[in-house]
Length: 460
Image (cartoon, rainbow, N blue to C red; front, side):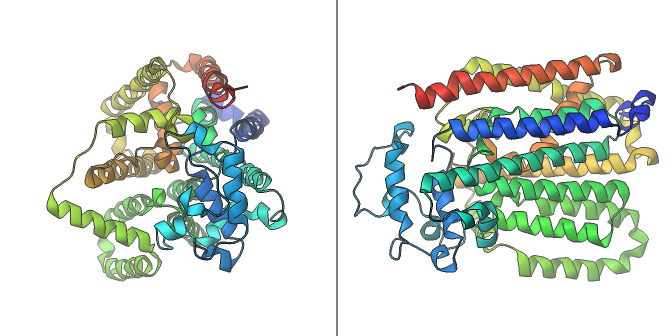
């Protein structure tokens, strides 16, 4: 761990030189280009929940439309219904194929979240942020409106990759392999590129959650300030109000509190007022949907009737990497086995790192970096654990999508790269990073041209 957390002389000389920034700009530009490729190749509405998510985005433009239901539909509901049939929405679903009727309600074709969740799904402000380009194009063709929102989500992906670079650089300020490898690993994840070039409020939740993790890491490494704390709380609350996939963040923040409670345990008299303030913040700002989910989970737990279907972790892994469309497109099992074989050494490498360098865990020299990694580990474990637990509690396999853990895609990528790093000699890390980049690029391209394009365009 010492060579991971400490700086090497060669890297110190490089510092934050222009080659670092030049490569970062290239990565961000490539993220935009590949995002636009995915956004244009995938036909309208052919991403998980995209029709229902777009309905909320479009409805967020006005207060009246935000509360729209089948009983008081806006005019563009009919245009959205026609667009679903124009682009053969049901041809790519394992579902029945309805017949278009201009008199049929939109809720007969897709799930309207306002009705399904009684107004408790998402937040109007966050959906307005997702769909801000529509303020300039609300009278254009609805498919064009969809593509404008897709472009905005591509920009969100660029923000996530930039934050991945900054988070890694803050923890490992002179480690080129990690600083560049983490954003590259995210950039060439085909499923992530697919989701972040389509319309879903999970994309914004991921961006906000990653921003919260960034300010957490900065606070731990460089010291907390009032502005830093406000940024953490602001991005955390915004992410939680955007989507339930960000509900892991309070656990990450609580782990920081444990560090400082132990460090300043002599000042216990501050514990009570601090706890009361936090309880007050939770009481006033906790999303109503989270309260309902906790209550529902508690009822099921009391019955003891829960079971985790093995397909849940399997599909969670598969769809984290590549299961485009509405999770109906699975690449050949061979590739999933290759991915599993590649990820296994990373896990082994992390174990070896902990076993061989455990004495450094108590070293004052590396305490900030170790605490930052510990918080990211807590965030990752809780995000994945909550998802698995919810599937077990509800006896359901519905919430097994890898996109549900994308808010911790940066910590996951850091730990994967850190694990692989343990098996690579220092002098070979530059070449290895190029090899990893080329391999990921080829995999991403293979999924795009060998699976996604044939799925949607085989008829032509």
